[in-house]
Figure 1: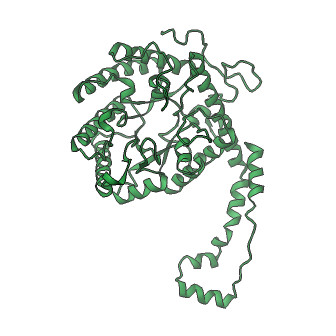
Figure 2: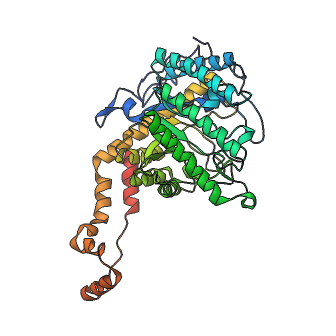
Figure 3: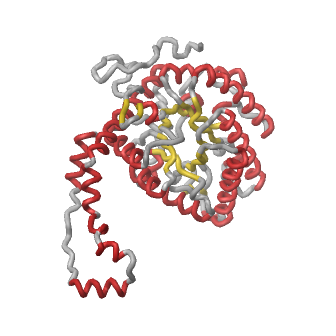
Length: 433
């Protein structure tokens, strides 16, 4: 075993009263809630990129982390995998997620990238077999290399489109070989910097075609997992085409893919889009496209995606409430798309960050489950709309404007406002969260 985490014991559940910071206070993987264990409900996953590939830079400064696996050789890539799976085991993390560029060194061309990825997939398969850790989802990094500076699917150069499509295929193959349960598409540079050099219609058609090819390849290979789009409104581009859930759904409808593709939702991206996380989850639930989540948080004073570990139980509770209302995860789960602060240099920081995130999610999930089982929130919500279940309400939904005008005159309808009882509902939620 590698020695990066050598002084850190396996993390176990000790309960809320423990003084041991290297223990779970709220996450007991074997605790049964609403008929399933927390482990099976939450389906925690670690992000390979933030935990093991990110160097600790920001827009104003470069690398702050010095990791013994940093470098561009296959030997170092395998050393990175050794450390990663060691961390997964110590945390009891059942899943992980990856980009291809996280796993392999960058090659001189596509063929070398593919060979490097294939070799690392074989190595990962051995690690997964030995540890029991599974792959929640894989994806392709189509945004970091300079070739993608003008996008991947949306690029004005058809050669970049071809390189991107070929890369997606290799990443789907890797995901399938590793038993991945989903495949994610995040269009970090599928947008524009300026409209002056952008053909919106052409780029939209290119993106739609790429997504159709992904779905076709899923069926060709017999992949049983979900294809997921991860919405984000901007950053690094000025405007990103998959802005939010509603935008993505309109796009899917346009290309006839609303029954084929779901969404992977991130808390930080929802905030950037001007929404709450629960808004995006509720919208996806109502549209039937909720697949998986990336759990993190943003710094509300910053105007960018800070990808911090979650620590706000009430926020997390509202998010999981929507997940539970959707019936819970099937192939999806809770991926910690979160990274250390660039001043947090130590191995212990990485473990403690995940412990805190897992505990926060467990506490929020249990609060959400208790609130849903109580039923009072749904009862009051249903009561607010009860009039629509009456004969009068049903009649309105099948009438035209002229008929409704006549009905309004006949009945002398003159409605009076009714309280929305927001504070009462907030108090109810606070009793649980």
